[in-house]
Length: 269
View 1: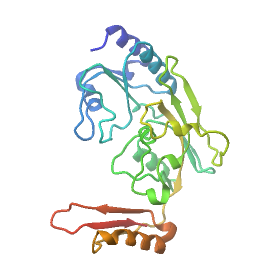
View 2 (view 1 turned 135 degrees about the vertical axis):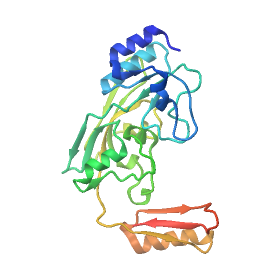
View 3 (view 1 turned 120 degrees about the vertical axis):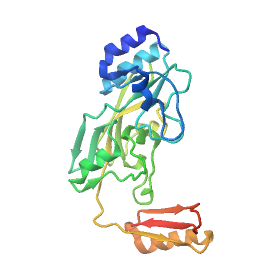
């Protein structure tokens, strides 16, 4: 449901691997993690920031609608096309070339297409990890775009807190590239422009590269499953755990609606 001249122009920009138009091959890009599903006109798979820029610029100039898609693991239908067949999915899944680890600064500069599991498997041999713990396995570009929290939020904070810099492509006729990357940790000058794009789900631009804070892997981990006497005891329990465990305390989660069992609370340190 897209003019052949547009398909040909985009194919010329991205090559055979960069454009998916066969219905069967597009299925994984059209169906979300839960129940959302749509119909894409095309799936575009740029490999570099420059290719994202060229693609976005072309689509804006020709009034073609883009749906940015990262790992497609979200549960709110934010990364799949609608059923009109007119929207183009722009996937980050081929953007996995750059992975530059700075051990002295404890930072990582990488492309937006890496999955969380791949990042941590590469960091593990250095005794490091990216401390956002999720049940899904998203790509890092989508994690920044949605400001993912995760279960270790109490200790490490969200993605916003662990991002030092980004590179982003604006949705304008030039496909403007903003280089907001920096390894500098104590940067207290001017406006922190990267925050305009973190947590805004691609509304202001597509994140193509980022610089992350990474943390040492914990030397040991313990998990306790507790059953509070009532809901009124949950917050006092949290305060008690924070008081006893201090900086070792990383997560505190509730588990509810378990058939034939009382509700319980789980904590990690």
